[in-house]
Image (tube, rainbow over all chains, first blue to last red):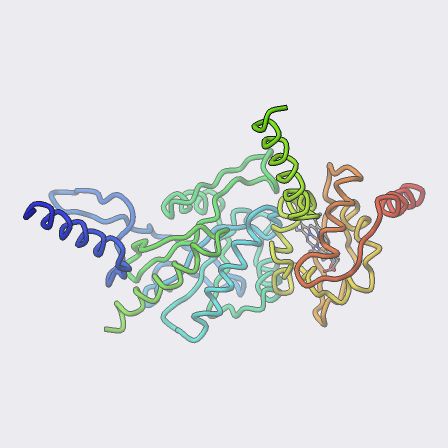
Length: 206
Length: 135
């Protein structure tokens, strides 16, 4: 009898722990850490430098006081990009007045998506270049960078629009660590992501 | 016939009846989600001033007979939809049969809050035939 009571209590405890809503007070750092000379180095977004829709140079330095949401797209994309953009816009609207947060969209088609095209796109989206940067630049650099954001991107003449890529949306902190991500085509996933953004903002506001 | 096979037949008939009635525009919905929703969204709301809405859209209400044409030929006029100007052209959606165009058309006409009636297959065909003559 003692045993039975013991098991039931244990089970109840596990159920309780397992079912109680997990609200992490701190987001993990995503990616494989590297060990260099005995020190653990977390995955970090490398240096980059591109221009935005106002021809303003945007690099890591420029973003160093902000946390930001990143995604990869191209303006003529007929497949998943508009759906991802709709979710990006949702995040934008949610945190419109939170100056700590910026949004950064890298084009995978910099040849076509020059500064003027990106300007038109962002004004059609109805967003401000202060808050949301649409970046263009050297194609090789952008594709390499996509790798560091864990975004699969490759040129593929067979794919709709000529590029095959995933619709991930990523959250990057002031130290260039990726802290959360969502599938940009999945509104429910993005709902959870929006609350994860709040957790990171709290981390800096404490 | 034994009771078991009777039961099987009854159940299958019931199932067919239910599954056919459940969603009159099932194929249209699937095709819409595959061919149109990336731009116009699953809920037909479009995206800002980039992609116009199809749900509760005044332009569509006034031009609903052009739906088959737009699907097959795209559209490149500047459009004002619910007071917003849209200037990016829509490319044709290739590879759809006339039946499929008809199914998408009828799905869009009655999806979400739309209540724009329906378009018979013959009518869809006529619209598409007219286009061929113009070409």
